[in-house]
Amino acid sequence: MRRTITVISVAAIVALYLTIFNVKHPLIGMDVEKNKNGDIVVSDIYEFGWAKKNGIHINDQVLKVDGKPPLSHFTVRKYKTIEQAKTITIQRENQIQTLTVDYKSHGTEQWLYYIALPMGFFLFAVSLSIFLLRLRPDDKSATVLIYFLLLIGLCYISASLSAKYALFGRQMFNGIFLILPAVFLHFVHHYFEKEKKVWFAKKIVFSLYGFNLVMFVASLISLSFRSISEAEVLLATFFINMVIILALLGKGFVYFKKDEQQHTVKGLFFAIGLSAAPFVLFYALPVLIIGKWGLPAELTVTSFFVLPSVFLYLICTDRLFRLQFSINHFVYYALLSLFPAFLVTLLYAKFVNEAWRLVELALLFLLIYSTFAE
View (cartoon, rainbow, N blue to C red):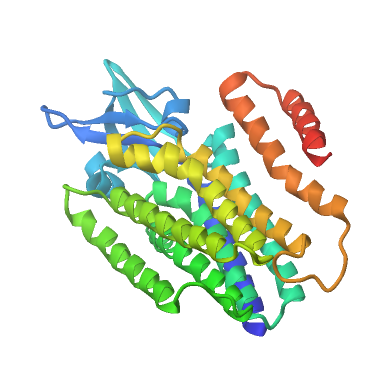
């Protein structure tokens, strides 16, 4: 129990550090290239980046980054993008302007997608972890589930740091992103092994750990090659992991055809399926197939709120870790209603009415929340 408490504490400290870095460095979202004259010009602008919000256009010439030639900045030299800069000097035709990038430069969407949502998810994960620790302090499967929840919380927070090419955050994201499916499968094996109803060998779990470790090394090596990108390695590996896990859970659903544990397997199947489906279908697969996403990752990853929500539901309905006490059904229905209400409100603000006002969204959220809670 002490070890788990220590892990939760360390995860919280790391999450705080990553969040502070996120606040200090907005996502600039500006790719650059060298034109035929040898000048560094803007080649692409990211939808949620600082550059787009500040009126920077494709083909604008970048004169200086932090008061120095662009190529002296490490993200320009190594990744052909501008991130972690404090000032950028741009020339468009005969006009030259120097723009300042600081924490005040975060747009509303950056505060929401890169700071508020990741921290909200991490706090949700920590709360559920503490609940599990009190419920099953010496249960190995509960401990593995706690580690899984904390890892996915850190993965969510470090994702934006990866986009900002912060070395610590980027490698943390890559490593956690690849190990998460194996940790989830490890939890499933531990839980059903305790129930003496496991239907797949433990060597499959360790094989998945080994496979993802190899692919993590491959993602590092891919930085030296132009034929395949780091993102392609990560997304392809994640897709393979999802297919393996869903296939094993599907096999488990058939295995428990006349057993009450079928409800638990079904819940786990929908937890991992529904949480990963938007990211896989609208981001990962389109990027792998046509090189362009259907929906931005910032929007699709909000579906990962489904994971802790479903775990909470399974626990509160006695389908996972039998409760030693009763819990008011209204409480967990109210908690579970938060995610769908928030997601529908977010989709409305993004695609239906971009000129929204905070009061309108608050009223809409309360209306939708009340509907789901009923």
